[in-house]
Length: 270
Image (cartoon, rainbow, N blue to C red; front, side, top):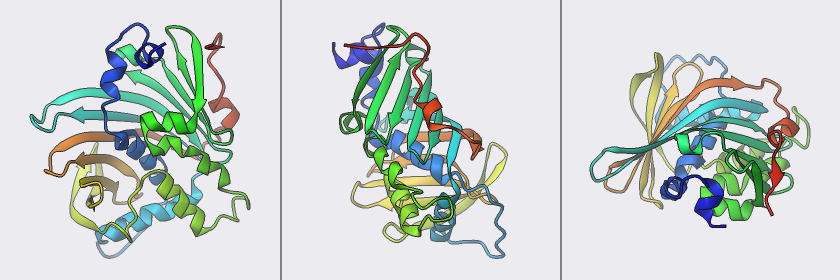
C-alpha cells in the first residue's frame, strides 16, 4: 500500500500535498503546546527584552504535566504570498509517561484521522476512519515524515523520574530542545512590538535561525507568557507558515493510556 493510500485512501492527492509542508510547522506547533503551558500570571515592572520573553516562557515548562488545545497550521506559497492549505487538529499530550494524540479536523479529506504517539514504546499509530485500520511504525520512521518533534517524542519518558518536585532545569532544557523551541542563549531574540491576538495582548518576538536560514516570529501573551501564534519566514523573508493555538487546557489530568486508546472497532493493518 502506498503512503498516499495509507493516509488518505479515499483521495490520492490530499496527503502527498501535505507532506510538502515544512517539517518545522508541526514541530513548532507541538513545541508551542508546551511553551504555552506558561499560565502563571507574572508581574514585571519593565518591558522585557526578546530573550527575557522566551526565557520566562521556557521557565514554565517545569509545571506542565499535560495539555490540550486546538492547533491550526496555514501554509503559504512564498512566491505569491497566497495561502495554499490549512490543517487543523485537536492535540492532547501527557509528559510522563509520554503520550500524544492528534485528531485531525481539517482538511475534510483528512478529518477523523488520529495520530497516537507512544514515547515509552517508541511507536507511532495512525488510525484511518476510511479503512477503520491502524498502522504502526517506529518513531524513527514516523519522524522522517513529520520531523523530529514527533520522531524524538520518546525523550518525554525520561522526564519526571524524580517526581513532580524532583525535576531539574536540565530536563526543562531537554523538553525545549525536543519541541524545537528556540534557545535564547543560542538564538538571540528581538522584541519587535506588542500586538493583539484574538483580544489578548502579546509580545511579538523574532528569532533568526542562522543554520536553517529561517526566521520564526512568536506572539507571546504579555501576562501569561502563553504562545498564541507562530509564523515562519524563509531566507528571503517570505511567509511560509502560520500556526495558531486556541482552547488551551493545561494540567487537566489527562491520562496517557486514554490518549493511546484506539478508536472503537479499529484493527491493526497487516
